[in-house]
Length: 182
Image 1 (cartoon, rainbow, N blue to C red):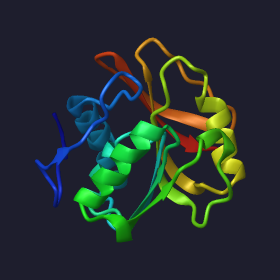
Image 2 (tube, rainbow, N blue to C red):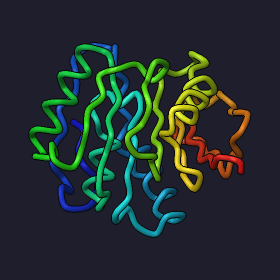
Image 3 (cartoon, rainbow, N blue to C red):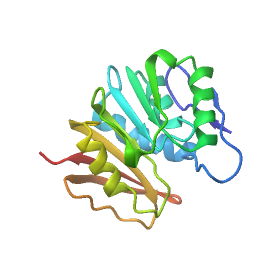
């Protein structure tokens, strides 16, 4: 069972979809990711967080629990989208979040750029470079943004227009933190 790790919702359970279509980020990997982010950000207070390929919404809800001002969830898989909506409702986070039922690859123009971008696409599908290019072109990534990308542990990441600040292996996952180049 997945739970929120820290903040105002610490310990509360998250629903997850049945089957194999969604691969939720393991609690220990999420804990490592948020430790890496917090060491660089200091706090999530007042930040706009984008959770792309959101699945259950665990990453964005974790950020809201830790004080983020708003979370934008982007998910288009039908079953995952239903679970995401249920999790947002369970946490009564409707006013602090928006759900965009679209694919990241076809996403429209952002209403507001994100300070933190959380990208957790299917492993090994080559989606990260085109997704980041699309998000940047559509105004989703603030110039100062910190971007987290989760990939399979063997996947290296080289994305034009972005610098990799750190890359760490955690079990079957690799966490990469990137920044947009000026």
